[in-house]
Image (cartoon, rainbow, N blue to C red; front, side, top):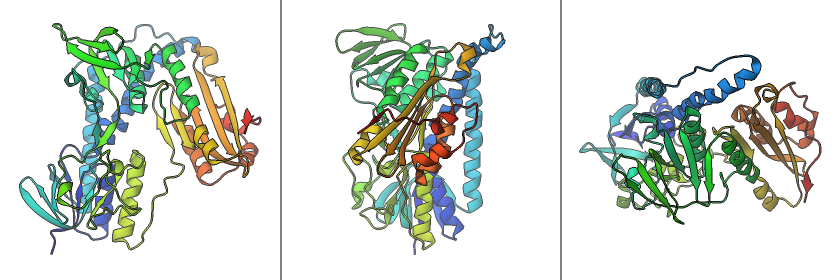
Length: 451
């Protein structure tokens, strides 16, 4: 007899969802969390990042307001107010997660669980057995090894800084890097973004990364592409002297490394089982989240699928349906929409142009770039960019991409259409809402190219 039917390691989005839903079927469930309820998203990810994004965007809003007759010359920003109000909201959400688990009858144990064998974990020197063990431990920020790496911070620490840096360097070219470059710049920090590659957001459609770089520079971010950091040393005044390959060196108050995340599988005890991992540390599972050790399962950021909260939530539901409701089902990873809360926003669903051309023999591209109606009075030179990718043989829209205000809100609705298999003819026959930026998606008629 096992202590629990299910023991979950990690109380992030996927772990909490799986725990609650399994307990609702009558299963005996416990979840272990060593840090904070809600995982990355709630504590050091999407939620606080979006709150910081909102706070940083007021800088642009105040400037835009002048063209509409508003005077906002004596505005002042107080970093501790934003930070502490954010902390209060996160604490509220932590409490909600705890109540959800308690109300579902899930036992919550604080601490790092280590797997001893295929049915046993140790936590706080206590051995606990379970029929099934589910690993939902997520990921952690990755900082490469170099001289002075101990002086940098990651996205885990930036949310809790005592003071806002006056001069900051962000290293990286992915979504976390471009988001925080915009946030720091908007909050008033002199911000530089350094990336070793030649294009930002390399996993997104190429047109988005190119245009975002232009917009970041226009907003005041100093951008250095194909730039490699060599070392960091702390000066007598606590400033950080950064040396770049090629000889350049500059001084900063803070250096934020946003160079990706790694699966949090270290010291988990997987060596005590037959669980197989990839070279990057992610756990190999089948379509139903079962590892090569039949009693051990994994889901979320730790298995190499898209690292998105809604994906982990869906995986948690599918896991419970399969093993606790006798209704096996797989998660469909095609056409997952996603957003980047850079400034301006980016959102996308479906294939990039590069991937579409690799998959289909006849691809049509429709795109539009324009100045938002708001900015005809604000004076801002910010551009909105929209792109549709169509498989010409079927007329299906296979990719939708946007750079511009509220891109995430707009693409969420269009993702339903793409998921449903809408054709370009359906887009064309849909009447737009005027005047909106979103109506451009149903008024693009002339392809820019056809291959």
